[in-house]
Amino acid sequence: MSAHFLWQNGEIVAEFSISPSSDRVKSGFWLGDGIFETLLVDSGHIFALKRHIERLDAAAQTLSIDSMPLHSALDSGLELALAWLQGRIGQIRISLLSSGDCLLTAKTHDLPEKSAQLTLYPFAKNQNSILAGVKTLSYGENAHALRFARRKGFDDVIFLNLRDEICESALANLLLFDGSNWWTPPLSSGALPGVTRELLIAHFNVGERNFSLRDLSEMKALALTSSLRDVQPISKFEDHSYLALNEVARLREDFQKWRRAEIDP
Image (tube, rainbow, N blue to C red; front, side, top):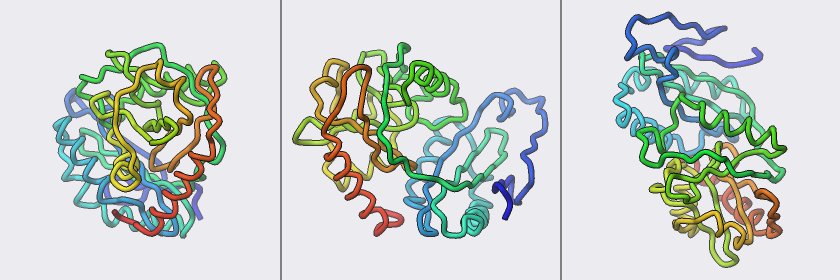
């Protein structure tokens, strides 16, 4: 078996290649101009594929990117990626550049088991930006936030928006437990419309409300949620520890059991 899976514009290739473009609007790779989705594969099935494709199409429409080049070959590419994974837990990333170039990559994946420790990112996220809530290749802000966190000895950050509201982490949506109920920041905060977030709201009574930085000290538990982590506990934010990890474990277990029974909800 090859060490990696890479599919470009309809065929499996050994290496990614891209041609320079004289069109500044459609140069895609050279401007970091495009969108992506990352899919969880478990027991040979892609979880919530339809919702991920719908979100990709919505992002393409927001950024005026033509998604038809991707749809014309996507099914065959996904089948090849699934075959390469051979039933192992893995992830498939779909990338669509504004130039029309389409990429699929696949690799094995381990759902995170250990808790995460987060710090505050000192630069506000603009909830009014055209890129707010869109998974774009222009990931420089998130990449810097992760470097910032790791240089301080943390795993991830919490973003505040321009209204000083809690938004999201660099890699995932946030879940907050107040002792009775689970909550997540609303999309108006600038948070990504995460697929797992959406399903937790629809099927696990997770509510939406705004949170300030001060509210975090009153929460009993925090967690990260995304397709590639299900529900991951946060044990610490700055110098405040969260001890109700059993509440996170219960939600995680219930969600994992549900999603394995509901492949494409």
